[in-house]
Length: 396
Image (cartoon, rainbow, N blue to C red; front, top):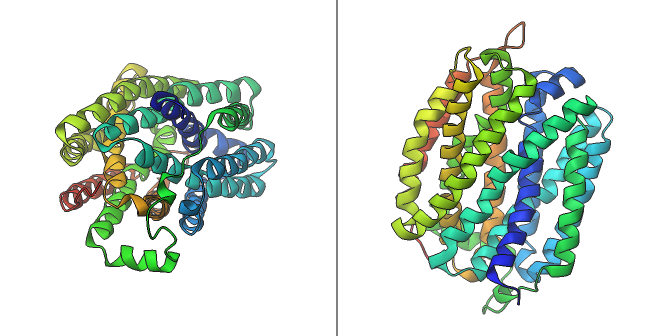
């Protein structure tokens, strides 16, 4: 068995490519709208189809995920993920790109489930916050390394396909490492009753008040985050006055800050408690959410300051939240539960994007109006999420 540190590093690498695949769409919004001649609503469909497909993938995984060795499942799903990104890199026009994003979401949603399932299977609860923090730091690393690199390539080649070629190459390298190094993990298959029919498991979940609260909690958290994030770059370019080539600095600085905050918050949640840490992070996050959705025209330095604080707080909420989700169900049901949880997350993300894209109105010159109302929706969802978190009990 490989060391815990090496395993976490591989999970972080999977998460890096998976997250980059999702978040690269946000900074490319202005470029895609220009090159494909599409509207904000059509861009919203590109983002939401990924999340709805990811929800479907997670639902499919629910019926199978706890029946196989984690290694076998990860290798199969990650191969599909690689193929999907190559299709995105080859996409000649909007409809083909839409289908490629659907395919990417189908596999990406399962990867998220597998990462958290492995952490829950292998990492003891007392160290799980730190492990989740390190894996979630890959979200920030995707912003620090992946997004600026992708934007630079898109600028150099004047082509939105370039970031997806970069992602395809990185994914192939990670996939090769997984093939050689990723260990067999079968702990979840050893519990009595692990072959319970899926519909019986669903019935158990539906009757479990704690699980219902946990699923509502993660749904609200997605509304609180992804109603805002996909439209930030578009707002910064068309309302705040940034140039397209300045966006990479926003994501670079925000990502660097979030790498540090994710690791710090992960360790803090082990010491202070997962729920208490989440509540603190969520309350603090309301201020930058409200601020970044109403920013006026201002110099780059001020924009960087506001967005660094926003990304730090955004990331800080997810570390204790995801740790809570690994601990509110018995180990024998963890994979199945996280599949349903991932489906709820992706549905929440997709619904959040659709809500925001229908609140936002495009001006004649591309400006986004009513983005401040989206910030209010996200803030209210955050408060509701805090309330629900207080009702969740940790099981393992």
